[in-house]
Length: 275
Ligand code: C2E
Ligand code: CA
Ligand code: CA
Ligand code: CA
Image (cartoon, rainbow, N blue to C red; front, side):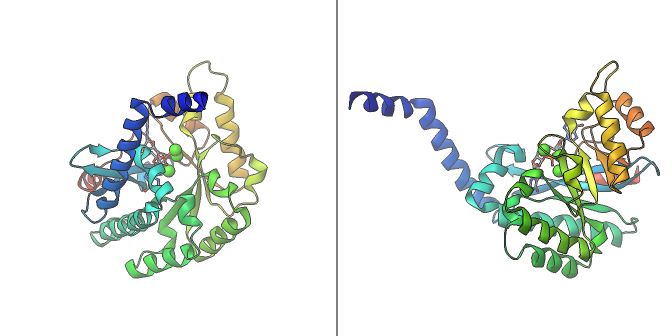
């Protein structure tokens, strides 16, 4: 019919076609990245408010593409999840980040905690717990030195199954952090059901810490209630001294953000630890 013909035409207009081509191209490129050794990990320091020291780091993926330069994971993680490429990629991240930690230790650095982002697609693999256990024992990293960061979306799908797996990881000693807290549906009471050790307050709340902002009280309450539940609190995206002062006053345990440091390539992270 004429109408559907018109629809078809409109659907496949030039820009849509370009987008499809670009996505297909990117998928093909992404498939080559692991083989070509084009993936990199950057490490963002986590600063402990009590000790005044860096006591850990979050591993963040960068795709160093000859065509695109340093590509942010925001551009390719979703695609990697859709295509299943995230499994191999995620395993590589886990092994690489734990190895880096162990190397730092071998060179005389005190014990640091490695935080690794875990996609729901990874967690849903039947052997996920075994994979983590195997990586830790292979590298010799104590489980307490690994923190897995999960988001709420992880928990929406196959809740029972995923919670059971996280519980198994917990009993091995692995730490679990709920990432982007406050950006989704989570309530603090629902947190009680989860085998987590830490809460990462989403940057959006940290952004609201400004003089005279009404939302400022929320961050304070989150910290207080999380502490009552025995959780460690990490604030992300801390950029200003004002935010720092507020978070310190509220007893926030650790912070991460440009105020302390951007995510750094390994050599620069080591220099930062020494400086
Ligand atoms: P995320 O886990 O919430 O990571 C924090 C993001 O905030 C990072 O972006 C980091 O560079 C950025 N950031 C940190 N401090 C500041 C700050 O003070 N100001 C601002 N404006 N931004 C700050 P990045 O590296 O682009 O990563 C984006 C997201 O990609 C991550 O969000 C995470 O969800 C995902 N991601 C990164 N690496 C991995 C990975 O290895 N596996 C999986 N599954 N996801 C990853
Ligand atoms: Ca994270
Ligand atoms: Ca986050
Ligand atoms: Ca995020």
